[in-house]
Image (cartoon, rainbow, N blue to C red; front, side, top):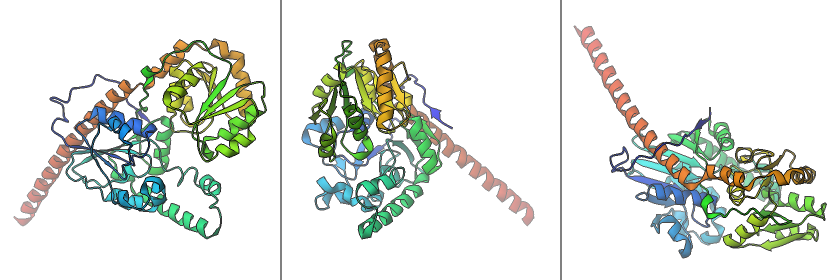
Length: 415
């Protein structure tokens, strides 16, 4: 059963059930400022008094303000050779590393997890709430895809990779009961949590700074895609489709290991802009006639940002995209993750393009605002901690009553 969090008036910390409670926030790692780090940034705004833990902390100095310039307690992996650039290579050590973080002095532990943060160790007197940005898709959903794309499908190195992933899956499954309550970032993610851990989860959509995007009603004659160039993002699908539609202009922003291959396959109607600063990205997105999104994602912050600019979206209809976009109202959803499926979607999009109302697109994006996230999350933690305390009290009373009853029965038998 999916439990959706409703927005209520947020109580002040003063006089609340959280007053005086020690809170720890655990994040997987701090390397770049991405979607999971945006969630962390808002969590720290909700609980600025919290202490921050992570496996690694290599946050650039000009980005430390996002995390309130907090000192970060890191794991032993922080000192491993070449950890800054090769941090993913130490995946086999991550389960052990996250379990070594000492959180015993905290009343409430909040993990923000897309890898191993949810596996921290807590005791029965602590409330552990875990916000799942993503699960380890390279060990689960896309296991075979990742092995094949990395050339690890065969051979000794492939066998070693498979053994490591088997260990990671077993460890990940074993962590299911370490969390008191799971919070998922979409209904799609909630289903995955149920599948992998056998647990219900409450849904709180991620925060998007929707107010930072200007509504732009005048569109130019090009489409835009913004992404890292890695296989599962399926930028190859976009390139293939638009190469077959030479009359349609496409701008692709981003960088990654697949850049050379994508450029080689692209037609003359496709322009690659490489990595760009956020303000440049926003400028392209707000003027585009349509934003392209072809991967399966647990949410899709970039989709919401496009809508906040008044730009409609063409998206593959799996993952969380259908939770953000209503087909024909905020853009177009397509159900075949193929170039032909995208071509058909673009043609359908152009037939209804002028009926998309930028104001309504912006209004839809506001459902995912950062302010909404902060209020929902604060209410969730307060309510969860209140339930936790009440449950402890109730359990204590039941235990005392049972002990008294057992003692009375023993005394009766003794007489």
